[in-house]
Length: 273
Image 1: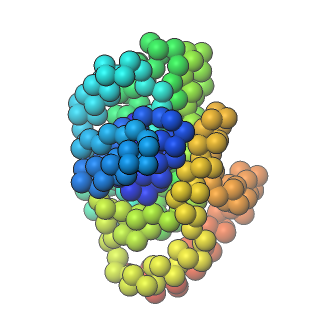
Image 2 (image 1 turned 180 degrees about the horizontal axis):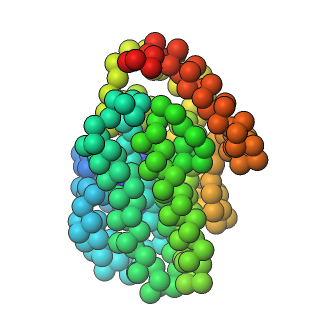
């Protein structure tokens, strides 16, 4: 099962899983798009089904999981991938913006874990893969709320990994760098921007960070999942920044501040905006 499977990383993971022989269940609010993806997977010789699910609705997600297990007899992988971005510094945020991003990016993952963990424990096998971000491993000024949710997903995943291992259940967390997905433009289909930035300026900023195509990302991610890696950072060159933050936190913080100043200049915004 892949939440947020209609586009971006979720879609790429679903397509790559299908080529490996998995029956894929796409769970997404964008049901028309998810249905098209499932149809294309089936036309290519794979097996996929699409369902409209809001990951913030635990009962709906739990029902889909239970229906799937009743039908297939098992659940091997749960990719808690659905997420959004909200663009802007903390002083742009209202409390409802915080609530929204926490509900989707963190509670959505918690709901997915809760929906499958007892089933996987009973099976004695299964793999939960949560999508966090490189922003969950190092300071991300300009994306504080997003980083808050992703740090929490990393903590949830690594802690649960240690707890779940004796039960035969694996847990991994994927921490993408910059991947070519809709979230780069405006926070994704259900994300939002709290500042005015011309699309071409935003595009140029992301292009400087060499975004990876999602299909290439998915292939690399699934290889790491197959090897039961705990923390999966892709593209691998982002590991340099993660390593630097761990071994020299003060230096990492100064570099983060410098990156934020550069970002403000690139986007044409300042502290007063």
